[in-house]
Image (cartoon, rainbow, N blue to C red; front, side, top):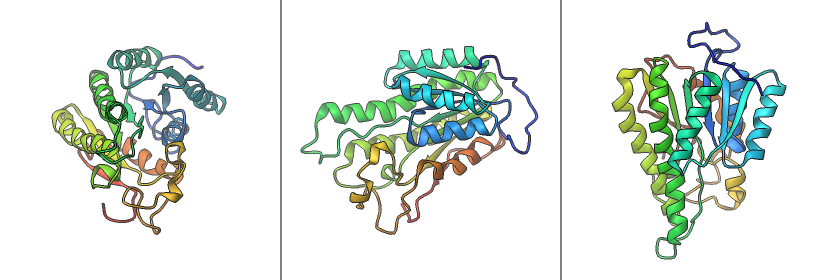
Length: 259
């Protein structure tokens, strides 16, 4: 795969608004993360594709390179802080810096009631969705600061903004992610680092294969917009292309109804 550093200041073109930027996308092997990684590469960014499944992120990176873009796959489990630190170190070694971080990796391992929940699966959901986001954001900050600023985009969920029976692990982890977005944004805005939450709403992915059968509090009503991963791309591009002194501490939702 293509190697080399990415200049810190490169004039953006009309067709490649992310030219000269380096982006790191977690969970880039499938679903929303893969769609965002491909779109960022098409917009001119060099993309680090990260996830636990090597074959999937390698396929994403290879597709980018085959299309004339620049990408590199790094296997990492975001639930383990040393692995996250190593991920960002490798990413910077590969492309000379990081400008955009999309924190997308997520799981939903316990969909039972609190009483019937399995402690290990409840904890694992929070460790990936919340602690993993915390590890990634913490590791990203010095690298974004070294570039004069940058973007952190948290992939949140409407379930983190409202309650729903049988979703305590996922909802609590995403509610924590929402507050992490707001607190972190307040801490780093003076460094020209924006932190925003992107709420896709229900998306038909491998994690939600039974989405059509679960039209309830977790996935909305029959009138809800059930999206494909590519439908999330325009908002992800919007957030990545905002000026350094741009919106921060905000939640942007693609859901049709009020949360």
